[in-house]
Image 1 (cartoon, rainbow, N blue to C red):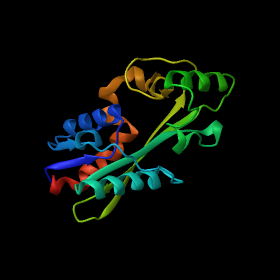
Image 2: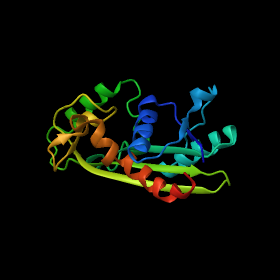
Image 3: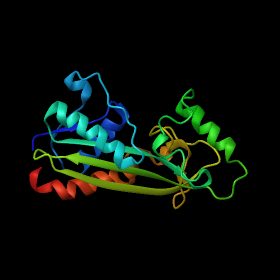
Length: 196
């Protein structure tokens, strides 16, 4: 395998995947829809992370003809019965992530159970059209204030209790080793190492 298609238009996610691959010694050309001039996107109307990851992987694999990885991920908050979950990116659509974080901090200011987790499900469709899934979970809590300047999305309010710091404070190097996405991608690397 010399090329890998990443089924995402999220520049932060693509950079993170490239960094994780590099940290794990995977030298491979990573391409994304922008590189190929693809402007259309599939509708992510699945009911689970796996559903949405498959929808994207299938769509771009069929377009590109290349081995393709897609992932769907989100933050699941116990107090909100697992929400926003698969709707994390579309949660409160009129707000940016900074404002979404502020909203959640305010909503949970008096809540004792602050447990939450990031979940990532990756779908890989290989050159033989075989479909594989890999899941990574990162446990944490919702912080009572935003902290840190690295990362993106909900990272400034996702607290890792053992360090008493948010993922945005712990930074990209930490995420590249320990995030939900890193855990899922490392499973794929271990599975695909013979063909890399």
